[in-house]
Image (cartoon, rainbow, N blue to C red; front, side, top):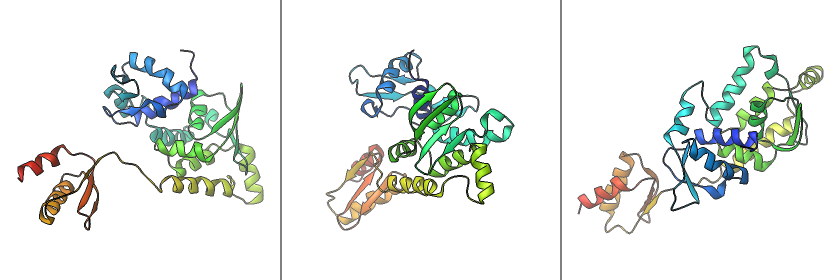
Length: 252
């Protein structure tokens, strides 16, 4: 296809964590990822509606691929697999990452999978046949978190695959393998990202009586769609409205 293998793998990992049949904005994708859409549609991994070229839908095929251990995983599961796979005895999967206090990363590897995993939370600047270099930034960590990766998973991955030079130096000095400033900052960036979370849904308000409001809130909570409510203003927010709409009609 002539596309960046790192972007391709990252996008495939991301697809596995999306919800089947839900529309997603094309505008949120990178230029390379947009170029992949036609190919992925041909393979049946996504659906591109002809009437709206600004959205795409993950298909059942793309989301169920991650349910098989031998197929693609979600981004978060892929991280866990990459970390646990270190105990399998494969020397190629060990000790290839050097990270500095200025957040610079040097990865001595030519493995497309290892580079793809790193690309999920690293902004690369240089690539050689057996080494890639980049930097962990607020934006790159936020991108990883948006794909379901946690700060602890990033830190665990870096520690598990730390270069022997780092582990030896840490042992001599009696210090942590990873720079504490980097570890703390990665966790802080996750906290920043969690301050605000958007949820698609529907706001119900302007009820005729308190009794009607309380009845609807109770029903919304029972069917598991209630996200937020305000007793004073008699309004609430839900993720789905079909059943609630029918319930309100039945009460009139």
